[in-house]
Image 1 (cartoon, rainbow, N blue to C red):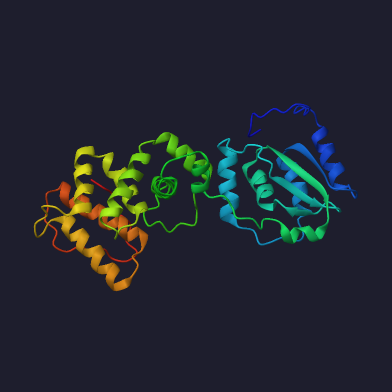
Image 2 (cartoon, helix red, strand yellow):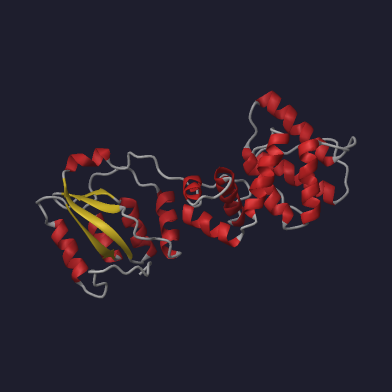
Length: 292
């Protein structure tokens, strides 16, 4: 079972949850809700009644699978919803995830809903990682969330930041617990962006997190110079960085996100190697290099 949650009045060791499911599937009366342990065999049974739904999103299923297997699937009130004939109206991605993860979850299940109510389901605005952090009173929630998503992708080996696999809120929360210093990286990113508004906070914060792990002192100096440009002579890598992003944004209006990070890493590596860099170029579709 993917959660250790125990609720009063629910016997989790009893096979009655399967009977509860059967009762809901045959319920032609008024809507009713129960808490059940949704096991893979039960999810598979429900999926046979998933005859009228939107197209499946494989990335969403995989994200749910990772959260289930990481024991990050609390009972939060979200329900599997069935119509008066026991057909699935909402929850197909969660059902597929339970089958794929081959683990049980504790969930609400609602039966007896009119079929026409399906059109109104999932019409609300989904909570983002930034929303979750804001609700937890996290400072700089928007920047912290954006940095967490990119650092998570980096740790998965995505050096082009083009993969369809996206981090979940639970994965970002776990990453922040593992690397609380990302909060400091977000602060530096916001401050640097105010001084030099041509690189997004998410790229600055991601780069700061990576560089700070290598050399905190050099990292602090590097970001100060990105912001103010003080004392940078011709051929200095940070001057080349500032010039490149300023001119490219003026010309193209927008720079691909991964290229921002690549520019930062190339400039950082040149500074670390005490190597002059008069012109900064990155070929399209090139993976971001490893900071040294």
